[in-house]
Length: 113
Length: 115
Image (tube, rainbow over all chains, first blue to last red; front, top):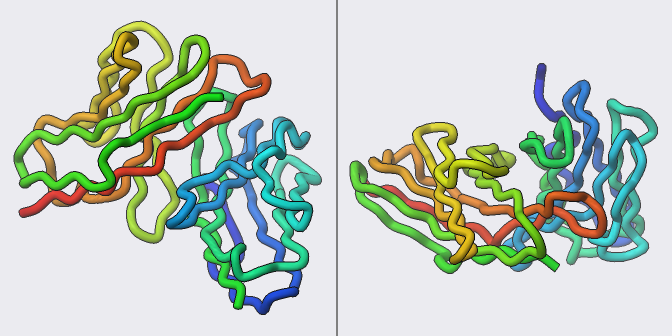
């Protein structure tokens, strides 16, 4: 398996623009997680899905953030409108079950100017 | 709510010496505990986990961790450090059920192994 795939790897956008981050989990994994990593706040869990259903989005910072998982092999994290404080590395991870190890993608480095 | 503390931002150790990266946790009930490692410009990689049973857990790349319930600790150890072990290490905790609580990662500890 190719592992968790994220695209794009780097995104530079201007404040106010819409940003869409994409993730393809490992085939057969039932859980998908979105994280944000910054120097100030460390690694934060934003939202996770079980069998394509959002279970907990309490980590999503604002209504500007939304996530979907239309099928078992694809998820998106959208920021609209983007702000400079959204600049971070966003990771997607997947796991077979709730307490199994998570496999992380390479991340998307987002810069909002 | 659960929490994870990694009291040291940075750990320096000479190559060949034993290393310890500390982690303490707070969670209601019995925890599942994890260690992950992050190399520069990469996602996190799983090292090991504690579920139940033997308090000493062995993982990837020669790492091991010891679960201490009375001290609520889960320190990561390796008998002989390698320069290639230099990376950012994260401890994480999860409750045994997935209702109302989520994975929580610690702030990370940067390990530098000096040649």
